[in-house]
Length: 284
Image 1 (cartoon, rainbow, N blue to C red):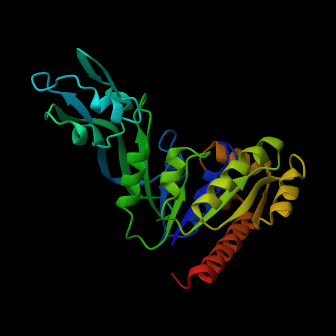
Image 2 (cartoon, rainbow, N blue to C red):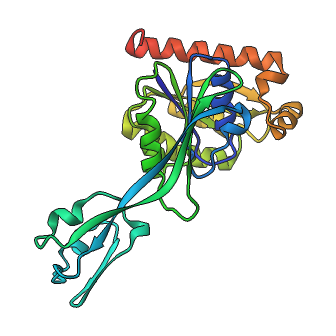
């Protein structure tokens, strides 16, 4: 079972929800796919037993063979090769490592070299939950390859919770691919609702069933509730804003550690997720 937790924008509480759920489930694997700003390890405090570099290929031009026909530049959808009648210049930082330029080159003028774009880490958290996360090197444009590697090394784990990057970027789509169910975490504010609508459309397009979790309930207004009602979206859980929980979060503690009522609410949320997934797919 693979459950993605995502949000329309940062700061709505998707890491809070994914980490609190995972901490209750010692047999689960939590993947922090927000590789640009991973922070689950702050709360889960894992003992790391695996570190691995993630590399990508980039093209290098063999000037002896290249006739500057510009077919490689024309092929590249990401404009990662600049070419003129006397020059062919790859831009390795924006190359997406698809390998297509070498395929269209008829003169064997393109080779590939590797460069490191980040690292992945894996270990057991202080709650016994397995935590896997990645870190994108500063200045790199895409964390998709890191996310794909995180998912690859956990593909056989029976229960996986994925803390997605915020928004609807390529990294979010890469996180969602292959997931069985999704939770959209939002907050009852106009900004929260506006950004949530794009996520709803993305999940519908990807045909991934989902429900909504309201974080910081009690703040803001009723727009998110009215939107969910108008779109017939299931609100699967609500977590109120609590000053004590906010203070605990600031020092790296989870809500389930400081509030027994919230802990019970997360257990109830997990039961509802299980029931929904079983209703959709049977006992996975």
